[in-house]
Length: 212
Image (cartoon, rainbow, N blue to C red):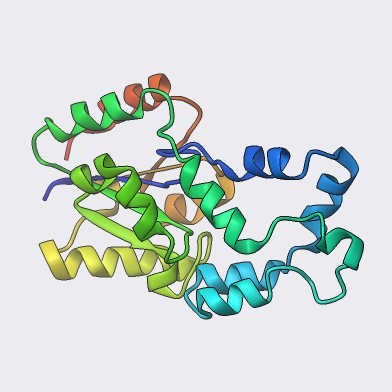
């Protein structure tokens, strides 16, 4: 393997459905603003790291002192999950970009995402991701999240074990958050901040044309 193009998943390959889902499920603007403060953020992070089960996440989904008046209004965690699965969609232009990239020689495709075990159900609903991805790196299986340096170290180790060592400059990492790009840049990876498929393809083309 000479080169690896590594994508974040949400808001890079897949349009993030969470915020538009909550906008629909909690139509009152004031209640919706408060909603994000009443989620148990630590439980969600632990779930993404694979440290707690789905049942434990559901039990801790909201902070324990959530007022009863809001508990009646806010969607159950089960309803949130079902809504996320229904609203999944590819980012504009991504299907065409992945098909084009898969036709290029001497390049592998990977996904590197902060996501929970729900990713299995996500991939089942968006089968092109599984079709084109040679590598899947999800925080729930790595017990580490971007931008923790260990997340990136584990990727390099896993690739070396499966396909042999890869030079850092032979990796292009795409993410929609600058903070997640910084550790990759520090390791010598090429990086690209995701905005839309057009500039992304230009960046990938330049990466593939660069000397190995």
